[in-house]
Image 1: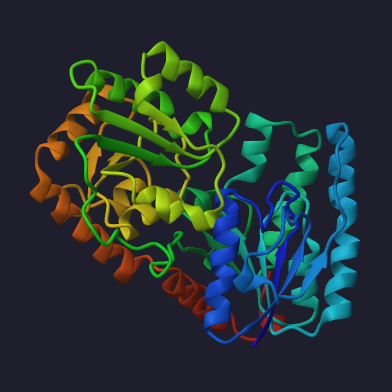
Image 2: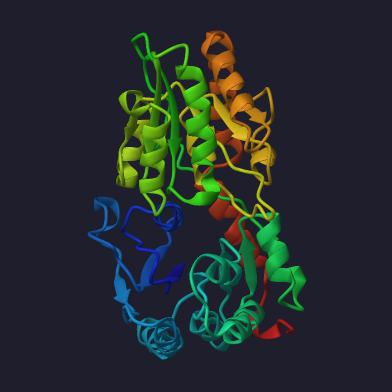
Length: 389
């Protein structure tokens, strides 16, 4: 099968270092492993492709560029004509798979017009995110694009129940909306082959440093632990807009000598850093709307690490408390510190949680399984021209 993978989002470099980068690349890899031919239609590359993706045809979409928000939004809308031309020139395709972006509607429209399945992947309530964390001048226009693209898609795959509900509120065709959580490459991320030596105990975190990831709770928890035991270590893998605030808090809590912040790392380097950890954390706060399907959780499990995570949203669906990880109250550094300390003093339990976590990643959360589910949904769509709006 010949597929077009579309990512018109100028904020997501498909060959970069973001979590969305990992997601995009792993979906493409899974499609390739299944013998499909994939071509990329992308706005932002972000660097050179990794060696295993170097031969994939890439169709560069127009750059959105900098400038006032209203001008960027206009350029985003105008880019649809270029995407339509690129698909028409490179086609035909058997399926169009697109990562939803605020202004991109041509991919699903082209698929519908061409009578081939169009699968739209929705990772977040982007309109709400844009309003809350950035700037959105033409919200009505963005809502109109969302309604149109959700209607044109043969299937919409949302990464969580909350995201699916957000989509369903904007479409009459709710039966086309399905929840397919994220996954992990269990061949790329594996448990370390030997026990980590030394007297220190490393508490780890992987992810983009943003306010909703709860780094303040993690830092406060490690500060509680290190107050009486300076053999605790904190390893933060990633970069982001909160990097400065994170470093400031580390200094304020007196943890500079026991903390390592790697900054941005290539996806290929993540397994090495996971192997430096004794326990991995996902310390999310108690958010009003928790819509994430955290990649870090699946990576922690695949690495065979004992996990301590907040009891929120999809996290509580992935972590079976006491079996493949531990759940604690969100935003509670005392509870997080107690869970970590308990695991430090119980190596057998750490090992049991790690084994169960690895098993759950392999059996339930592989990217191959994720893509199998998505392709099955696309096949169920039937003749695209017969779908009713």
